[in-house]
Figure 1 (cartoon, helix red, strand yellow):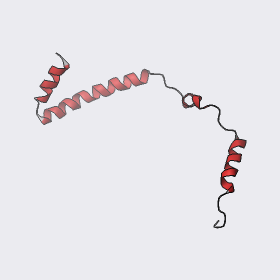
Figure 2 (cartoon, rainbow, N blue to C red; figure 1 turned 90 degrees about the horizontal axis):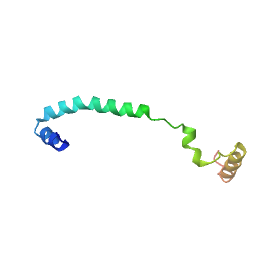
Figure 3 (tube, helix red, strand yellow; figure 1 turned 90 degrees about the vertical axis):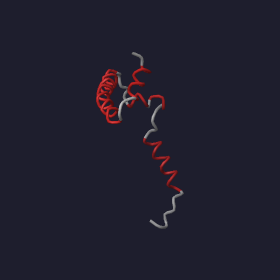
Figure 4 (cartoon, rainbow, N blue to C red; figure 1 turned 180 degrees about the horizontal axis):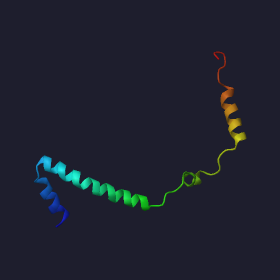
Length: 77
């Protein structure tokens, strides 16, 4: 039986039977998807950021922070 034949038959069902069909098929689909996802190797977050290069040093961050805050108005503080 082809997919088109199954769809044609499913469209002939009542609305309640369509909902029941979905309720019966959805757990199978979810199980198949979780099985496939659990077998895929996961990349660490460090690996995801590897193409960004080296992180700025603490000194570079301090310099950038002092440059940005240098022009911040301080009268109201």
